[in-house]
Length: 439
Image 1 (cartoon, rainbow, N blue to C red):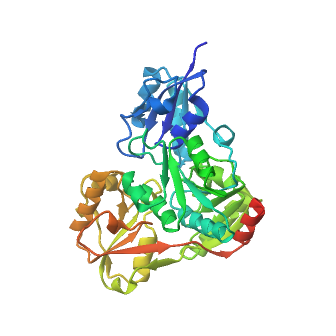
Image 2 (cartoon, rainbow, N blue to C red; image 1 turned 45 degrees about the vertical axis):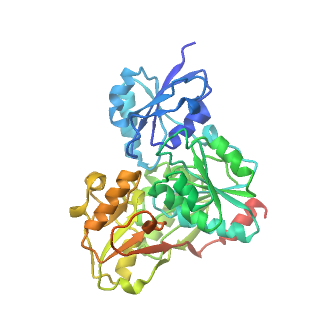
Image 3 (cartoon, one colour; image 1 turned 120 degrees about the horizontal axis):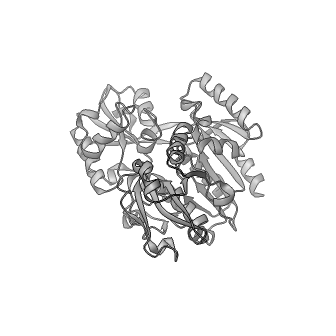
């Protein structure tokens, strides 16, 4: 029997998980390659044989998605599978059109094919877009579960940007673990807040193994999604975070709309900084798409270390990288903090950007006068440091969830911006969690 030839479009996350769940040991299919986008330096590598299984003794090559139209005929692809997140519905159909025009089928794998079953109760925190506020929502859920006497372990969406084989299963319980695994800024942004709360977080590539390990330490597992992907694990309670700063995106991005429609609980975040009419429109969109969901309105109050230093100063704002890049936001918590604390001016980093940081501004021209905290590798971290050092700023206002000063020394004081979830109205989140988990 001829095996069906499959090409998986990804970004070093959902693509590997879908392969492991559906194709790895399936003799009916031959995965002839992955394609990569969004993450630098992924294309040209291989999904290693040690993870790919017996059907793939040489591993699986990873190509550049930009070559999709040529790859389909060159690799004799029967089926193109889209397996990454936070792209518009329009982009999904552009990719589908390229695949179809080249003669291949186009597929999306859903929850029933790709979700793992857990022996422990699971609460998933997902979102309609990158940067909607999953991190502070996850921290709030962890805080509630701990107050209920539960041992909580977090499982984070994959970010295998280094040695894929070495990142098969990763456990983070200390800052030393972050250093040992040579974590990128994006990884540290997600792991550090858990570690500071005494919570172990797992991540990696093989989520069946990751889940099994986490279950040994947990009473309850919190799935912390990446971008706007849907959960890898079947849940007892599915929480989706929506963003009124990008109202309408909850119905026009993949798979964010899936999360909106799957949710048991929808949290409208950032109501303290969004326009009231945007919040109202988002509420109306939710009521139409998922009228059964419990809806909570929440603020994300912002605090700054030593805020008196900001007033009247030249401030360079550093925001969460993915929120600005493929999340398409032009600002974040750092910008809001600078404005509220009456900074004298915001320093434009673009004339001073170097290397891949300058390239990011060219690729994402909407970003404007804030600096994305990009650090996918040592070289990019050095370029970030050099960019900050070259900016004529008195103070750096860092709105990433990590202590940026632990990683770089740009010769300027760095003040941290912090933000947490503060539910304002709607059903009680603690009670919803107790009911779903029978606590």
